[in-house]
Amino acid sequence: MTPFELESAIQELKALCDRLGVQLVIGSAKRQVAVVKHVETVQRLVADAYGYDLRALRGKSRVSRLAWARMSAMALCRDFGLGSLASVARDFYRNHATVTHACAAVKARCQTEPSFAVEYSTLRDRLATIIKRPA
Image (cartoon, rainbow, N blue to C red; front, side, top):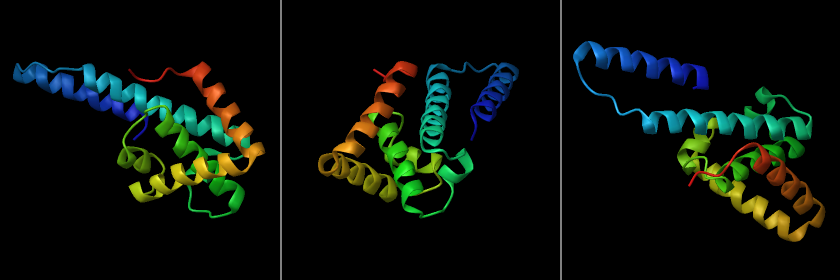
């Protein structure tokens, strides 16, 4: 679901609640919109850094360089607290086990390959200037 679709759904829900005379608590919904926007920000940042488009990053290709870009994006989403394993998996059209594997693989590669660690750290630092970690 895109941020626009989510915001539209919230507006429809608000209108329905108004017609029914029911109060809608919107705080958590607004936070979810922000998280969805941040996940897309992570995906765009990583896709741009590796020279891919979003379709490729979210796609099924197992080409090594693309797979590492995708796993890095998943790990960044988890590092910044942008959702549970299941929600990050949905954002990448994967399952939670894939996200778990991605996080472990990125951590292991950072420990064994200094150049990858620098690359990942640079992405994390760039992302930190764009978004704030949820409290």
